[in-house]
Image 1: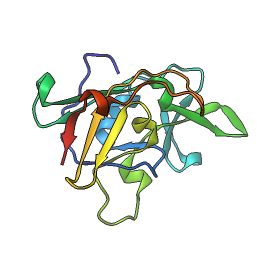
Image 2: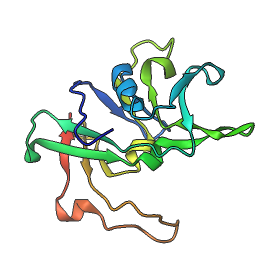
Image 3: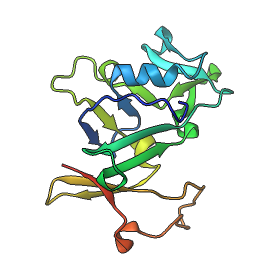
Image 4: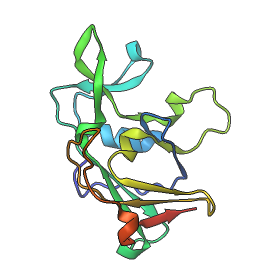
Length: 168
């Protein structure tokens, strides 16, 4: 999405490390993929959003918090490279499955589904702290670079008191 394209759509999201994709309200997903002209919902993939792997997906930016000031929340960014999740199939390696999908479609038939689920596609783009005792989640920026299992990318933001956007 262009930096000046924002959809004001308040919703309650679940941060879930057991979910792979970033699942959002339908209108947010449609606005995001409108920036990729060849993106479309594909019947052969259950109606999921797909696009040519050669296309550069835009970053997805979001705001967590009640206010609209810097100190009132957290502005996050999911790199477009994370949205280009994976080839849709072995038979169709040039078509990529989108890392952002419609929560209604992905959880069709599930009762009491959340408005959105922030799965690994989103969570790996930031530091996330779960405060179980207080029932909240905090976020902090991190450098996005390739890391290995034996080399950490960056220090712990908890040590520096940098967490923002605690959600209840």
